[in-house]
Image (tube, rainbow, N blue to C red; front, side, top):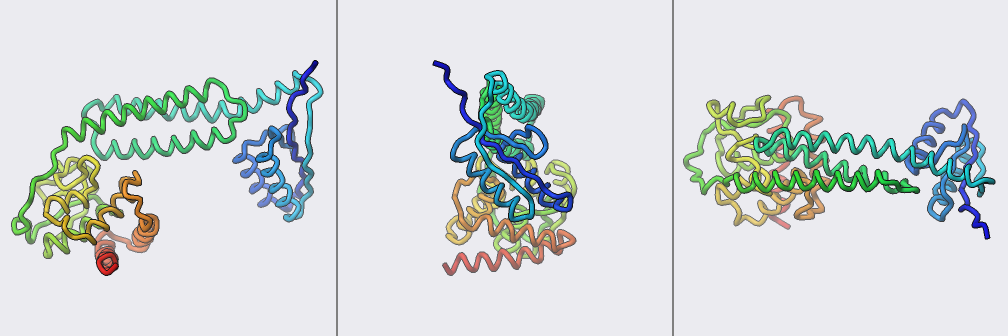
Length: 328
C-alpha cells in the first residue's frame, strides 16, 4: 500500500502595491516562522497545529490590513515534488547553519590564538558572543522541519567552544588572585582611573568608591582597557588586569566590596547582586530588578554627554537605589 506524503499548509495572499509597509512586515514574519516561498504570494509550511496557527494569524493580519489571503491544505502529486520541497526547506536552514558554524569557528580561533594571554575582558566578550550564538541555534531549530547532519555539527561546534571558554575561564580563575583586605585610610584623596563610556559596573563601582571608600576621590576616564597603561596616573578599576576588577565570578563592584570589608551591609550585597546579574549576564542571583536597573542606567548614558556628567547623575541614582534597598 502506498503511503501518501504528509500534507502541507499553504498560504496564498495578495497585497496592493500601496501596502508596502504591511508587505515588509509580513515578509519578516514569514521569515521568522520558516515559511518557504514557492512563488510570489505562495508560502508553504509542513502541516501541523502550530504552523497552521502561524499561517492563520498571518492570513487575518493580511485581510485586516487591506489585502487578500487564503489558507489551505495541499498535497504534492508526486514523491519527487514532495522531496523537492523538503530539499528547499533544508537549503534554507543550511544557509543559517553555515553562517552559525563560520561564526563559531571564528570564536574558537580567537580563543586558541590568544592561548594563555587571553584577558578577562576578551573572555567576557567571547562568552557573551557564545550565548548569543546559542540563542541563534535555538531559533534556527524552531524552523528546522527536516533536520540534516548540519544541525548536529552546530551542536558539536557549540560544545567545543563552550569547553574552550570554560577551560580558559578556569585557568584565569586559578591564576587570578583576589586583592587582599585593604585599609581605607590608605586610599584617601586618590585619583581612580577607569575606561570611558561607563556602564553599570564601572558606574556603580565609582559610586561605591566615592560613598564608602574615598569620599574625596577624583576620577579619570581613559580610552585604553588595560590597567598596566594607567597605573602611573591613578588607581585603575574595572579594567583588564586591574587589582580592583573582575576576579573569578565577581564583577568589579563585588571585588571592591570584598577588598574593603563592605560585605556586612545587606543593602550593598543586594546592590552587588543586581550589578553582577546585569554585568556578568549569568543570572547567578536572579535579581528581578536587574532589567529595569539596566534600562535606567542605559537611559542615563544616553542623556549624559560626558562621563563626568554621567558620574554625577549616576551617583545620585545609585544613592537613591541603595536607600531604597536599605529601607526594604
